[in-house]
Image 1 (tube, rainbow, N blue to C red):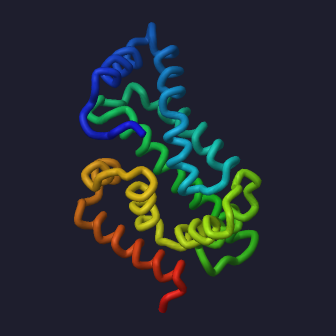
Image 2 (image 1 turned 30 degrees about the vertical axis):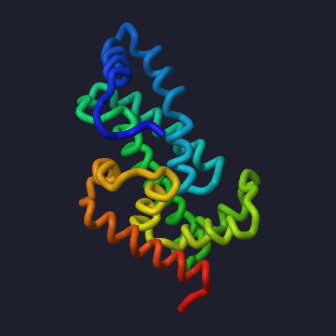
Length: 190
């Protein structure tokens, strides 16, 4: 996965091409090709469903295209795109939950995610993986986000802090509490 720390030469080159109206279209195609897979993975971990993830990813790139003139270049392209993807995924989940709440009353806010995971034909995990994903889905959104970035992406706290605009201390506490809850749920501890 691309790092979100300092801007490297490739980012500088691509940013320059994105800012030029003559090369913008081709450069954006390169950006999409370069970042589609890591962004898809990030969104999928929050949204869980393949079809919904694809829709959110498309919306991320639409917003990125429209926001190119507002991109200041003070962070890596992946960091900028990740922020858009994170906000779009959370917005999508809020909209889906509201729609679901109007159709059928839900007492557990994460039940929607679990139902989508179980109904997803692209999910091919075994029972243990399903139990793990269900446990992750039960985490509060902030804890889930920090856990996913640390566990799957092995992202350092300073990079998560940059992406989420949250202090490293808060992130460490969220990760600790997430791990504690996951252990309790997976091991059936009280």
